[in-house]
Image (cartoon, rainbow, N blue to C red; front, side, top):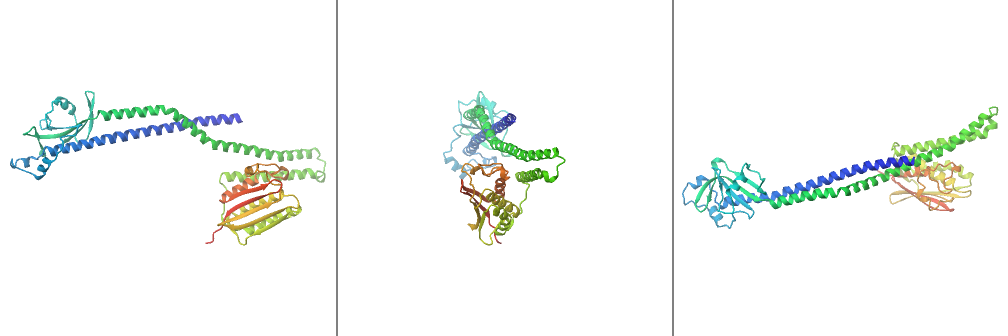
Length: 449
């Protein structure tokens, strides 16, 4: 069984590792793509903005004049144009070349430049669309181009050289983007190399996450398996007793009931014990699946405890145990009366069961800081310090703390802890071996409207 469980968890571990690694790898790739797109867009956004400014500066500096203004007279002066003439505007950015295209499709360079080949510029600008920046590669270099066209009835004129005025159809900005393209390519290489080298780290991370995810699942599985094993063990004893006594009865069919009363009583006792255990197991199963509904309302705690003490008192008197109470009057807690009744029955039943003759049990309750505090103290056999952390676990029995001879199944305190948790309360225990045990409970106080 253990080998089968181990194989099952290994398969689940492998599946979770693959799934986690795939998710992490996808996230890593998407993150790299987002970084690449962001840098690419912002890098060329700044360049495109510079190109627009260069075109604007070029137009202003070259006194772009609409035809109707030029034809008025040669002595036309504009304060705006004179102001622009006086401003120390550069012709273009150090990396940006601005040229014009006339109505005949010729490329016009504002100032003669022997280093610029008009044929190369013409080839670069072939099949260039207007209005949006685009990238082209020629002669092993990358360029960014922005072309602005004017309406046919509003062609501006540009000065070429010192005196020549030509109507321009387009104004075009060109810049070399080799460094930017190189940086983008290096970024892509870095992202791809990082993804490849990080693949093993991603697999390790996926395995680590899968292992961490399986820790509570495996713990829950082991707890369930232990629960089933313990429940089977608890049921095996009464079933074996019932079976044995029944077989002995069948061996002597001639005996009357009085002669077999001991065996019949044993069958009845074990049947009752098995019925109680099944009912308890059903309660825990329903509690685990949240099928038990709580009816929260105001519950008078003194009345509830007095009802329970009346039922426990005869058993306590048979053992010579005295029960003392100290209640604040009219304490009202908010909770489910049936479950609170079950809670205190468990605690008082344990107190009576494990308190020797002539001992005593003390129950107190009071209000403190908006909560109801209840304590159940006995002078019983106590619980060892090693056992205290585990007493609320199912089927747990410490040394002489939960004895099968007393009919205990090791489930009472587990149910008590569940009830406390459902009421959003707290429970803790102090105990000294051989001197007694004291349970402390904190429950919500019913608030008066």
